[in-house]
Image (tube, rainbow, N blue to C red; front, side):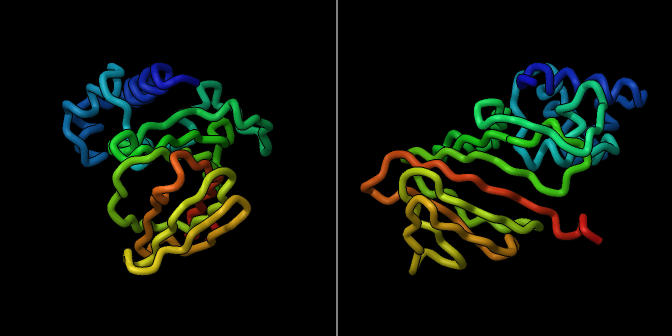
Length: 191
């Protein structure tokens, strides 16, 4: 599914539920203008925004990517089949996200290929999930809690963390590109 189809799916689901743009905006915490821009493919929502919109629609974010509603308990894919998701700030920080399990409904893990290019370091992030990070290519400086003592990661190095811990990544000056497999998991989904 491309991003145009994603925007159309959001509109179709909203309309099937007889929900107005204003109602979706209020439920999701976004402005009416932002929802309209998303539905009209004038802006690409971040992963976090997609989650809020899906929640406001009463569906899982994965259902936005599955127009047929078929919920097989498995799915096959290829790294080349990843759907690019744009975070609001991704380009600013040289980060590209490719969702790998977008076809799987009801999943509790979200695997991504994340590509990094030289850019300013993003602010520290913290979120309500667990995160598993595998560096595939290049080198990364992985920061936890502060910028004083980053860990230099090389291909094959991994990080597992409770992501409520503030963390950030940056490329060292000697590296212009890196690629990682990152799997996010919602720990509350196992309850």
